[in-house]
Image (cartoon, rainbow, N blue to C red):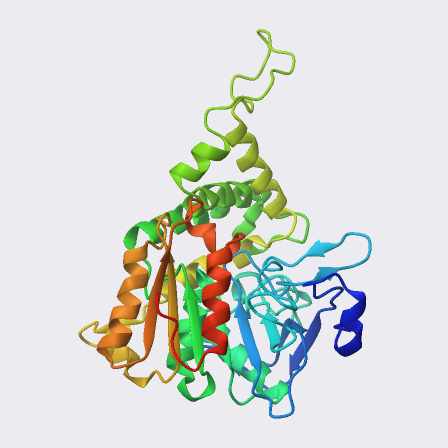
Length: 391
């Protein structure tokens, strides 16, 4: 159970505490954007705080490519796995769980409890693999909306997310304009650049060309671990910045272990190499290769301007009713500030209430995930104020 009321008194200040995931089982058919259908789906989610009597204090958190539903609190007494946005969500934090009922889902197509390619197809008794329908950002948001129906939430106070999560935030504003009051997309884009698509394709090829991928029909614990690790290593480079990597690693070398003529000349020598290999291996331990393929393709397919015949994003945003705070990061070269500014410009051209903040942080695209008091103040103010935050 999630702590609430007097139970907060036993928790550390600002901490949600122990949380337990829940599963939403949709027994009715789910139709994907491309027309494919599944007889039912499961969406795994977590909640923090309490839903008020009027059901008006709900905030949805949308995760990025490698994230999941566990964004705050801790799992288990022994492993104490901390949520990926724990510093951002909790009592007294930017998203204050004393005031808001916070929900985070594992996106459809995921591999952390929601129905995805690694789930068992009831018709075959084997994982879906590539027989799983193509997933889009639209599908992710549609599934989230069905969870909101189940929870009795007609309108969200806010939807917040970065990167792929930011795409979901924008999709909420367009697909369900009457169901969200505020949106906070961070470090995101209305459509990926050719360069970003190219990086994703290199990652996919690393997986697909791994002999253990087997056309997507690998068994659990027998998948393309090498390809997935390489894909993660390459992608992780795009999440950082040159300045951030220089400060963290520079050209520091690891102490030689043995040396001599028999030493592998391509073994880890620089600290940054060790870091990337660690990132690759830890990712393999928690993520499914086919989900990585599906999610990166969903990123590539997301194209809000393309929904207008003249690729006019402001026309696409004419339907939006939510107030918006768009946040970019100066060191982000994957979804650079210019792409975030394009979003706010289109919203204002469409006559919508929107403001923009551009933060000076050194860690590139991943900056939205890091400790950032300025970010906290912006979001906290935007959530409580009837007017937009000025920046």
